[in-house]
Length: 329
Image (cartoon, rainbow, N blue to C red; front, side, top):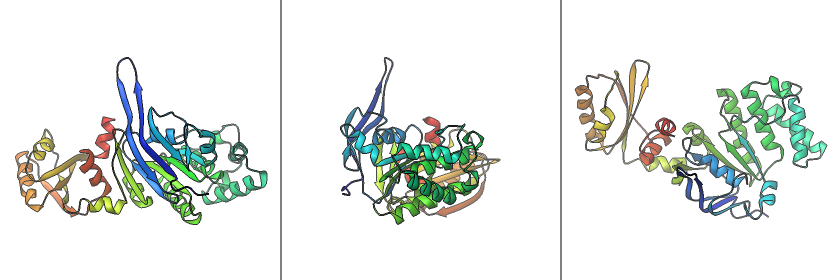
């Protein structure tokens, strides 16, 4: 019977303690995901995404709180949880290099208790879908990182799990391979009612394109959770600008943030220019920013007023861009 929640956590915590310090990886996470959802966790490395998935997949014990997957408690009913899930991580090196792609997949099918007929049928179907049919007899040790990740993705779907955990699944994939994986993930959800995916990613566009709902996580805490469209609408009252300028150095961003009407600013260097992304309370704050730009001997090259993105939502909640958060992590 299908449970009310595919995933549910209540005040979920994970704390690491050493003699020198205490690190809170998860600081009390409350989360619900319903069957049939493609749910995204969006955040930088070190935000708690992988820790959360490891607890959900019974690979890591929580320090406190509770967690259920497909109606089963991850602590008391871990065996039952494992029968209903599978997991794919980006950059993983699962499989045996001396075995071929097909031999590896057949082996994992045996681990999941699939009979030969079912295993071979699913392997053939998924190899064709992921464009690996011509590599079925290739030893895994000869595969590129991207092709091995495709094989890992097939392994994750082979058992036809109720809940599929995808932890940075497109890491190391080229654009076309990543698109194939995303398209089939969405197709798998739509064609098999009740199947659920929890996707962790730090690719904003991937979360926006794929997910029914997104939770933004930083510092082990959920800062916001809603549909991508609703999260972006939350910034509709603000004004978002993208500026390209000649190089800007020094304490420009800190000084601009002190100006009235500037909610947030991020800066990044692109070749011989600087890109500035501004979130303003209203248009009236822009002239102050331009004046300050001149005071730093920088020239405006282009200016674009645009609609809010998930990146803007992230900056508004966290106070810095995803790239800056990655560097801090």
